[in-house]
Image 1: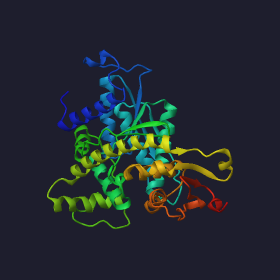
Image 2 (image 1 turned 45 degrees about the horizontal axis):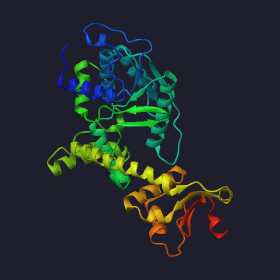
Image 3 (image 1 turned 180 degrees about the vertical axis):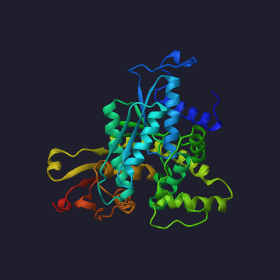
Image 4 (image 1 turned 90 degrees about the vertical axis):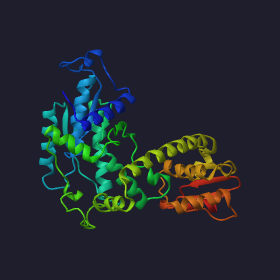
Length: 369
């Protein structure tokens, strides 16, 4: 069979991703032409499929690669019930996956809780929870996500708008663990036009989410009621491309890769410092509401980039919500302490300094004891 340039690239990206996870060739017989069925106990990979062009292209490529390597390959579809006819859309995508030869193919309906995080974040959390539960139940080794280079560029811009610091520009990781399951993004070096081409070449029909604004004419402005990602895709990125006179999707995605390398290195350094400079409280301190004890003198000797990351990691591990302003105030307790009180966090959490020790407490009254 002769494959297009888009298909060859997609196959290469997926094979490389799977090889890095020890999910490469299962048996030499799969290197020979012919029809080969994977062993019943062969590793199972699952594609998270929405019915859109990206995930259906990934489903097609994943099934092809599974045939080449002896892996089992299935699909998971999550119906959020948030758009009209969502059950029909999910079932139609499931039929396509089955026609490709994928097995198992599961459709799961979830109820999206309403929280202060917002509808997009709520749907994402419910989706990942359902994906992890289904994948673990099936004994899968990995779930494949179809995010493309375009998605990565959009994620970086969302980060710049909503966040700050290095994390704002690192985008999506190529590999992540969530809910005890490994998630892989093999298409981060593939463009959306490539997944579109693959679907067209293979005769695969897809569904376009109306909130993406794909039906709006180029040059028109999407209404602010549509998701930020859609407006970035339709309005901001084309404007950036015109302004810069170059492909900003590629530049933003490449920048995300470089920033993530820096972040991974900094995180590895912080892990070592955490073990050395952060201690669990003594029994009597626990009774007084102390959650963690930090070595202020040791922290002061750290580079600011490592110190602030360490302080943020302490708060994150304790489940304390915080802002960049509060991290700076906590850093002031380390390096610019003149007897001032530390920052207060939600739920009455507070930080205080006593001598060379900074205490993170779950009771705001601890400082007065």
